Length: 335
Image (cartoon, rainbow, N blue to C red; front, side, top):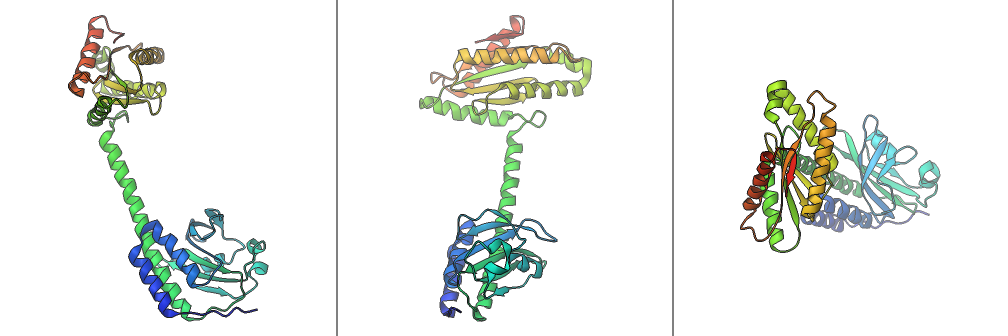
């Protein structure tokens, strides 16, 4: 039986104005889908974007009024497939569940599909509207559907640009705090982290230790193997530091040249000493089997303490302890 459909143009235009003026981003997509469901008196509405092109075989559901639908769907054997292929509004009044294999387990009788067309006339998404009733929607709804489609296209494009800009921002931020040679954190970020941790230590929210590391006899390596050889040693040593450190606990920095630091959160001097001893052993074992021969480290360790006037005093003391290790014959840890 064909269900009568009451269409109120005023309600439709009011819905469009309210959605577009009050909502943006993902919230816009969600509210739009829910508004379309009410406006079209539907049982299911979802808004999608194409995953692949020429042809489009998969779609990603940006929002569905049925949260149980999968995020990625195959178009084959669905009415949505025809929308992407023909890039036109598709109206099916009845027998959707009998016509399309993927819909046979549903109660859907009618379908209304609206393509979302890009500036270069490509179908980049669509609005799928399903009803359990046999019905013929009035032609006036087509104009409303097209308006919604164009607004969704603009909003999804804006969302994509925001996403791309966020990726670029993160990449630039990562570059600003990362050492170009070793991919460890750099000196600039080291100062910020030290400042933040010192402030937290002052508030008794965390404890931390600082290890100041210097590769022994690094000038000899540069003299013998050139700066390329020295860079190779620094990069391999950085890999050892990453491998031997604990994610979320140990923060590793290259301060410049052959000097490195590790800030370890909630780690006592005793455990920090054992950690650095493992790093020294791993470094020695790794390089003795290379052309560079055995490489040793001189290390100074200091615990963050609120009795220090500022974090620079902590760094300075760790640096002095590292030089004491040098003077004591190198290949040593002073805590």
